[in-house]
Every structure is written in C-alpha cells, then in structure tokens.
Length: 464
Ligand SMILES: Cc1cc2nc3c(=O)[nH]c(=O)nc-3n(C[C@H](O)[C@H](O)[C@H](O)COP(=O)(O)OP(=O)(O)OC[C@H]3O[C@@H](n4cnc5c(N)ncnc54)[C@H](O)[C@@H]3O)c2cc1C
Ligand SMILES: NC(=O)c1ccc[n+]([C@@H]2O[C@H](COP(=O)([O-])OP(=O)(O)OC[C@H]3O[C@@H](n4cnc5c(N)ncnc54)[C@H](O)[C@@H]3O)[C@@H](O)[C@H]2O)c1
Image 1 (cartoon, protein in one colour):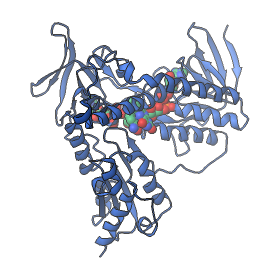
Image 2 (cartoon, rainbow, N blue to C red; image 1 turned 135 degrees about the horizontal axis):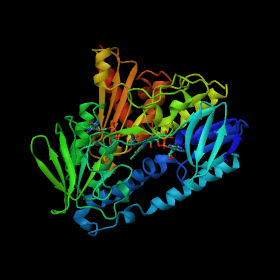
Image 3 (cartoon, rainbow, N blue to C red; image 1 turned 90 degrees about the vertical axis):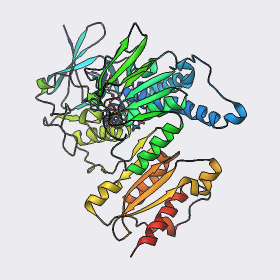
C-alpha cells in the first residue's frame, strides 16, 4: 500500500529554481517536501552545467596564460592528459556545494524526498523511489522546477563515448586531440573556446553565419578572432547532415550538406535544450505544454492550474541559473500569497567563453530598430591602462544610448572580466541614470571599469 503525506508545499526538482522555492517556503514556516529523482542535489547547474564548465574554464585560462609566456616556459600539456586532472578541483567544489545544500535543506526542515515525481491529480503527486516504492504527496501548492536536458537531433548518433552532449562531455576520460562542436549557441561557444584554450584542435560548426546571433557583430567578431587566434576553426553557414562514430576508421565523421567530411577524435553536440516534462504526466494535473514543449506561466509564475506554479528552465528563456533561483523564490512567494510585484525583466547574460562576453539591455541592432538615431560609444581594453598592464587583448565595451545621447539602452562587453563589469552598467540602467553618471563620478584607476567612462565620453562627444 502507498504511503500518503500532506504538505503545505511540494517542490519538484532541486536545481536552482526548486532549491530556492523550497527554502523560501520553509523560511516562512511552511511544511515543505523537496522531491529530487537524482542522488545528488543541485540539478544540472551543479552537476552537468554551470559549475563543472566554469571549473574547467579556470584551468583552461591558466593553461592559456602559460602558453602566452611560452617563449619563456615553452609550456605544453602532457599527451593523453586525463580530463579529471584538469577538473581536479571539481570534486571539491561539488562536494562543498552538495554539503552546503544538504545542510541548508536540513536546518530549514525541508523534507528531502528522493524519487521520480508524477502528477496524479492537480494536488497529488506520486513519488517512485529507486526500489520502486511509491508514496503519495498531497498539497494545495506545487512548484514544478524540473529543468531541462540536452536536445538530441536524430541525425547525430550520440553514444557518450565518442559523440557527447553537454551533460556527458565532461565524462571524457582523456583530453582529445581534436573535437567537433556542433552549434553556435552559448554552450557551444563556451566549450569550443575552453577546449581550444586547452590545446584541443576544435572545429565549431553552425548553420548560421556567426555564433551567438543575439550579440552585435563586433562582439562576435572579437570572439571568433580570439578563438581562431588560439587555433580554432569556425565554420558558419554549414549544415550538418550526419555525424557518427566510424569503427573501422576509429574516428568521428561529421558530414555536411555540401559533401564535406570532417574527421575528429570526439564530437560535442550543443543543439539547445528541451524541458524535463515527459515523466511528470502533467496532463493528470490538467496542464499541457506549449508548442515549444514548455510550461506556460503568467507574470506571477502561475500555470493555467491555479494551485501549480513553475520556475526555471521548464518555463523557457532566459534559462539561466541566475534567473531560475529568483523565479523559484518568487513562485513560492506568489503561491503563498506573499506578492512581490513583478521581476525586473532586465537580466544580464554572461557567456563564459574565452574571451568572455556579457550583455544587458538592447544590442545596437535591436536599439536601431526602435531608435534609428541611437548613439554608440565604444572603448577598447587595449586602450585602457588596466588592459595594457594586464596584457588583455580583444576587449571591447560598448554602450548604446538614445538619439539624445542620454538614456542608456544597453551595454555589451567582450573580454576578460566582462561578466563582472556588466553589473556596473546594469545598476546604472536600473537606477535610470543618464550616461553622464560615468563621467561625473570617479572610478578606481587603473581598472577596466574605466572603459565605461571612455565609452560615455565618446557618446557625449557625439551629442548634437
Ligand atoms: C553546460 C551548461 C552551462 C551553463 N552555464 C550557466 C552559467 O554559466 N550561468 C547560468 O546562469 N546558467 C548556466 N546554465 C544554465 C543553468 O544550468 C540552468 O538554467 C539551470 O540549471 C536551470 O535550473 P532549474 O532549477 O530550472 O533546473 P535544473 O538545474 O535542470 O534542475 C532540475 C532538477 O529536477 C530534477 N527532476 C527532473 N524531473 C524530475 C521528476 N520527475 N521528479 C523529481 N525530480 C526531477 C532533475 O533531476 C534536476 O535535479 C548552464 C547550463 C549548461 C547545460
Ligand atoms: N553562461 C551561461 O549563462 C550559459 C551557459 C551555457 C548554457 N546556458 C543556457 O543553456 C541553454 C542551452 O544552451 P545551448 O547552447 O544548447 O542553446 P542555444 O539555444 O544557445 O543554442 C542552440 C544551438 O543549436 C543550434 N540548433 C538549433 N536547432 C537545431 C537543429 N534542429 N539542428 C541542429 N542545430 C540546431 C542553433 O543553431 C544554436 O547554435 C541556453 O539557452 C542558455 O540559457 C547558459
């Protein structure tokens, strides 16, 4: 017979969205169940996404820095280096994060339930644990935070041994000599440039003419130049028709529409992500997915069923850990009638490629659609004292303003430090400061933040 329990709130999924949803409910004294199908807490952010990729990147940056002084050190990584060596700190980072999360969950009296959740009714969820035992949880408030998984195009024969997706790529035993990366999105750009910096011969292939199409061309040009300077190959406007492991030739073959064949030791497919909805039987709750496979929510993160809220990747863009955490917290507050008002839609994007990229607000292209006379100011890092001191090449900060050269519409940055620097622009925009704020106030010197001042002065100089 199934065990049956009653909770004030049930949260499904322990990624950034679910974790913050559950903790928020517990903080206001509610009896919460946090359901997670995996043994580990933290979702793809902790175990397969954000944290592992950024940990590998730290080592790639170190290797790149040593290569840059190769005239002195003649630095090369040993052949057949185990990938585990390059993410050696990852185990420590993950253990620390897991323990922090477990302690937080337990000291807040959140009940952690390991098992796969599926809806029985809008207010009842059945949990099947690894032994096949089923328990029934009931609540008037349910938050769905089951995240996403890699999308696998049918013509790419992912085997997790030679052809990988972004969930399995870090399970490679050795650093390969060559890697084809399919896609020109965020995951593709991050991993392509990280592996190239580690000395892998990377070929990045996408059907579009440039990667990261939501950024302005001058930023993506800088990214491509940096990637190609390290020895990578960017192949835009190329459609992949087939990719598979050829056992006889012991190589991965990637076939393009124009007949080209590319051989590589390994392949990473980064063709977007799909929401984790199929095991949930949401139809039993009276819910359905939209034409993109996502769960629709209103501005308060409420689904079409009033007692059910959803947060994180399951509701679609921006599909970021940063946004998911706040969505999770807000979903709980709204469900428990603690309204917070709507979330600021101005969310920065940070791309941890090499070089790094970050943006907030409108791009120049988007701004010109609305304001054809928009004014743009730029500052190159190699013209900023801190950039020269630190030997930072390939850096650019760009501010887009209205036609009067006053209101800041957007900021885009490429170059080391971009993901931190962007918050200066973000705070100026949120506070509705004019561009003059960067000139009327003194920043530390020498810092890369000086780029804001240089770009702002350029805009002020263009005012009519
Ligand atoms: C390679 C990579 C790099 C990334 N880098 C960044 C970055 O630098 N910055 C950033 O902000 N974002 C980054 N992201 C995005 C970020 O990881 C996601 O936006 C974030 O993890 C989404 O959080 P979530 O809580 O919605 O879902 P997830 O983190 O996917 O967690 C969902 C959880 O739900 C569980 N679950 C699913 N179905 C069930 C079920 N039926 N029953 C019980 N449990 C279930 C899963 O096991 C999982 O633990 C990256 C993603 C990837 C793949
Ligand atoms: N630093 C960060 O914040 C960060 C890092 C990694 C991932 N993420 C999140 O993870 C999400 C997923 O990343 P992603 O790079 O996989 O997705 P994406 O949407 O950025 O890129 C998908 C890529 O797949 C290609 N593609 C789409 N449909 C295809 C098809 N039918 N066949 C072949 N190729 C196809 C596209 O051309 C594109 O290049 C992102 O939306 C992002 O929000 C964030």
